[in-house]
Length: 341
Image (cartoon, rainbow, N blue to C red; front, side, top):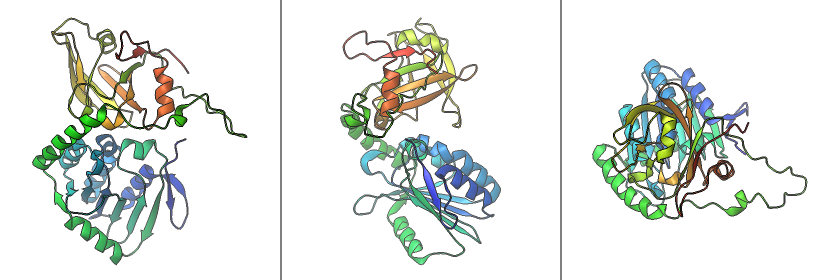
């Protein structure tokens, strides 16, 4: 079940948040301002709207401010860096009581004001996978109560720079390294396929995600690499990327999370100790345990998908069952998948 509706006041149309935001950005006038208030932001979430924001800013000469919290260590330092590289004013909450928990988007020009208030975090799952709800309210004027709230938020924040990101990143890595061993909590009832279906309901079919030739790699809760972003390929899987297992062999590939994310360049090298690693900026300890699906998208180009057991347990387990068995106790499973469509 994947539902991401937005209720638009007045017409009561139901639609996904991302297209709703993109439509209003296209309709906004020159000199608009966009303020984003989010409990959590990840790089994969930022990538969901980065292209739309860049196009809007070029056309409207608009200004963007991102107010973001760091509670529970969900916000990704790479997302803060990506926003700053895009010349977005990033403000991190530091002086407040409780948890900074809003999910609010405010878009204003000289004539109109659009305000989204909902449950979506600026994350991959918040925009693509979770069951979310948001309301779009539109007005010709302003709202003093909202303006007062926004001013209080701004007074509680400091503008982000690389030093601040590094300070947060170091503390976050220490925390998440301790939490990584257990992985994220998943209620077993969500993935218990043997449970009797409720009367009158059709049992869910297992998803068929893989295509002929896909590489699927199990990522355990705790592996090497800071911030949970580094993975190590099994040596026998390197042929998928056109590599041999000979130490010193290397290749530069371009990878992207899904079809709508930008490709980024990554070197893969076989080291003398017979290991090969890659850093995937969109991957996080919050995603682990998970399965990574890689698909060829052209010469030296690959798209990947993260199937986290935390948010997509049925899909995660369905793909995991197709992989080869571990070669030793505690080792990961992987496989080149066949056609299951």
